[in-house]
Image 1: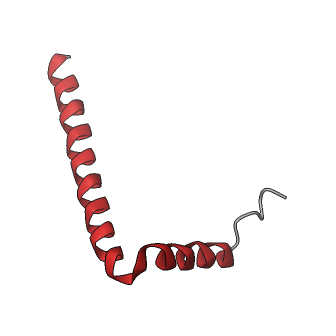
Image 2 (image 1 turned 90 degrees about the horizontal axis):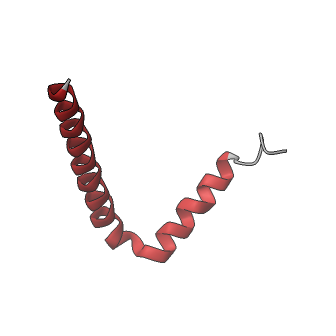
Image 3 (image 1 turned 90 degrees about the vertical axis):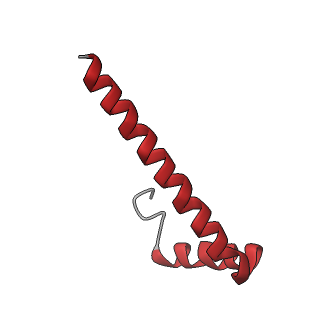
Length: 56
């Protein structure tokens, strides 16, 4: 039952709801800010790993 819980048409419905809620004009800005946040998170985790490697 759980194995087949997420079908491709479920994802289509989720995408449609997101487009309706946020509108097509705001989606590129939202995607850009999410990408920027992910880049910051990645650089911070890399810095922490480098810092831990220097301590050892």
